[in-house]
Image (cartoon, rainbow, N blue to C red):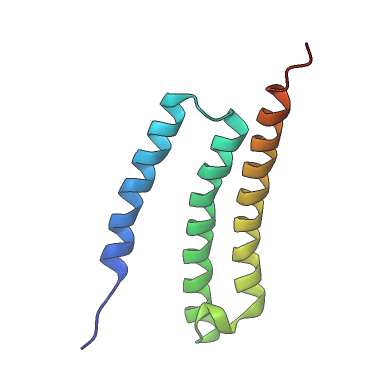
Length: 98
């Protein structure tokens, strides 16, 4: 039995976009942390592009092409770094020195 997960992947973007909208409107996180979550979508996009390139140019899956795989994962590292920096800055802003 072959199962194509692509439709589920596309459907999973909707709840994430709703989460981003809620996060923006709620104001519970600093803007830089919200950008970290937004950059996760850039990671997803770059992973899709890298996977297509791996199939077309190298006739292999993305996990077998280290340069493309590492390049795509770099965007996840960027997103996580921006998120953590945003959270750390918000924590420093909340310190009460009175």
